[in-house]
Length: 208
Image (spheres, rainbow, N blue to C red):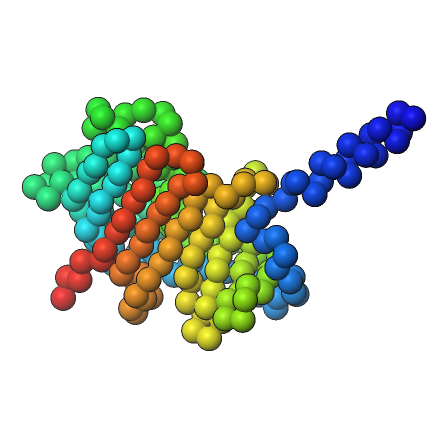
């Protein structure tokens, strides 16, 4: 009787588990073992964006600069249009160092959320764990990242990265969308959270 109860419990539990991102998608054997995110990978480029960040009933506007310093090392600085710092972060091997953050944003929940955002945005080399086909024009590569997953949605025709969906084992957490790709630069980026009241919109500023 006890075995029957346990069996019924697992039957009821497992259909409710799993990531909705890949639910119902056909899986296939990809010849690729790694996917490289190209958008913040050039050490010679200062990626400068006009930025708008909505965070916990506060709205911040200005410029966001993302600079690759070396492999697995990015500096992320957000300033007002007058050059005053809002925050200054450094990502190195998955760890975040806070050089500065203004008082309104200096809360652990906000810092940790922004860490996940920028780590997901800039993570360059990603081992492919599973591969799926999404509709007719997209491929999806799933990569493990610690105890979570990144799902890279690729346009099959151009091999451009269109979207990253960052998930736990059961829930979608962050959705990053890339639009208007020019010379391996996403000129329009939106970062949306499923639950956290944080939204980031970025528009690339062409220095030419």
